[in-house]
Length: 277
Image (tube, rainbow, N blue to C red; front, top):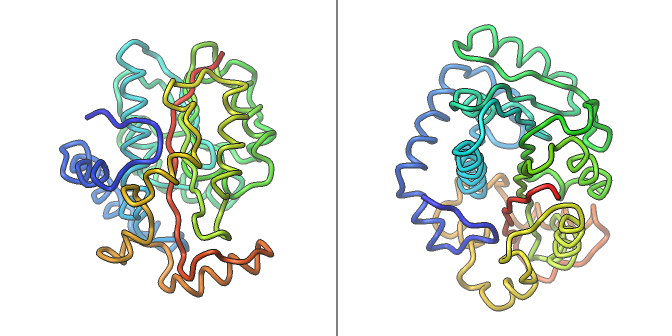
């Protein structure tokens, strides 16, 4: 199943949920969480990272892009940037063609968790590196693939981070990236800021042709068809990482010193793959 770059429509999202790709990843994620159930105590955000509204698309998107890259490349070194600890780098470590996955995160407490999981894990285990994304402790041209799932929208240093991603990726290597976009005026980054981020990325990486279309244009022309947290809230509220959308909205408003344009928390997300120039 081919998952295209951009903001997915609700129909594309539903097609994925019915696909064998999703079901295979779901089985792996469920088994991983059952095997290492102590990780649930670490997840303050959600207790089940895979069954979260945007992650149900983002994880398969990352997996799909990396699998396509592996069709023509072997002995591939992968960096999970802003990894936390989830099933994802373990699943990727099992793919034929992946020599090693390195997980980078700023949280020093992850060392103990990775040690516990890696001690029991029967395949090649990911390695953990502790440090900031804007100052990666790796040589230039180290990784064939860098991927990052919904990290850049939570930092003010995305320009420095993008430059570091570009530095550590090998020529013709790829960056697979996802980030959330706030539609309510206060959450994460606005559509305008998201477009600014995309344009900055395209200064350092080759962009697919369909990335040239403005995010703001996509949202304004197709907002009724796109996956948003408000649409998910209506039917599958359990997939949202917040229990009280209005209170979460107010919290974001105070944090960002801004005024909501809607009376409910509302996000979408953008996914793309970039080739190093």
